[in-house]
Length: 219
Image (cartoon, rainbow, N blue to C red; front, side):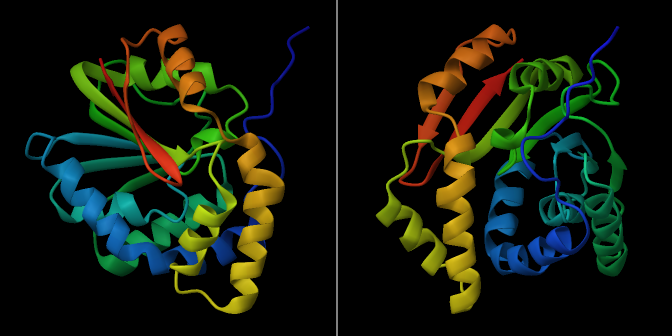
């Protein structure tokens, strides 16, 4: 008998929760634009980019605006629809579909760059997800994980949330979610390194910040 593993930890991002996240993360648009510029500079013109767990699709949309072929795979039906609507509203071609990070519905060696932002800590099978990211990359391709660190200091997290420009109620709610749920799911940098190597990657380059990290992995 085959046991099916739930693709994510905790409660799924569907319905009202996903729509709230869509509204809240719009305030991060300068960050999405800046990240899209960095990625576009590393990908060939018209190159293929896969975003794993794109949520409302803001980063994917910014990448598509820069002439890249963009595909986003998310486990949330609500997020897939929101991302499609957001892409249509911006008049860009970006493909969003339902899928599990641990079993990506993407062909072997078909993309130039994989990015996963603020979602890796929620995957229930992180090593499998890392192996899948490696599988779909072309030789020489790059994957980028961006997420929070397990050892983030509360004062740094509060400074980050205060700088998001959301109202007092949303700041309180976000701090409660970060402290009560997301920090507990997050990984220490040595755990990210260990899982990457277990998934078949070479030693990753990990750049840390007061709140999170960027892990760069090369196929």
